Image: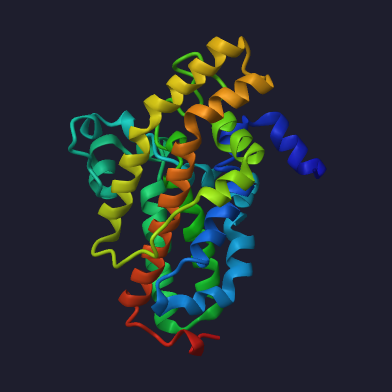
Length: 276
């Protein structure tokens, strides 16, 4: 680890710096590109670049903390969400709560939409460099939206006495069980998304719904292991959440494939072989 990264890890919580961990993002990006709709299979030609750069958004966080809010949304902070009437229009949300509040509680849905729209434009322009950049970043933000801990005010268990659950769930378990996760992934190749923003909010809402299970699994493992830093704890936490992790990663892959396909359709179905 470089000196700069070491300093960042010392001064900022892991939960702030990591999202699915590098391994999780790489897994989701690669699985997506290996399971694309037939019409856009040419994207596979760019697989190595997109996979490698699917973690760039996290690297940028190390350099500019202003990018941090782009990786999450504390969606359960908003009373509208808890009553099933979430305000999805960013400007309307800012009008009600103020720009600083909305930013503090995360911009993930809108940065995802922005990257989707940028990908559409890049495909229309047949600009290969921009297509690769926005495809890689879109992969990152879609993956973040499928990580339940990126959708809640209680993002690190700080409200329930479970500090550190963020990295235990999304980094430790993935690193320990990477091979099993990869062999268990399942996904359709995706389909056309009529409206990107509602689609994005739908999968974020679904991710948020899994939080009670994750918090309960952490407490269960702690109760029986007596510690959160033992092999027994990790085994029990994995036992209770492995299907959830596989579900979220598989869903992320399908959602990403759908958005890639939809961006291509919205761009007028350009001949991908002509993009250079």
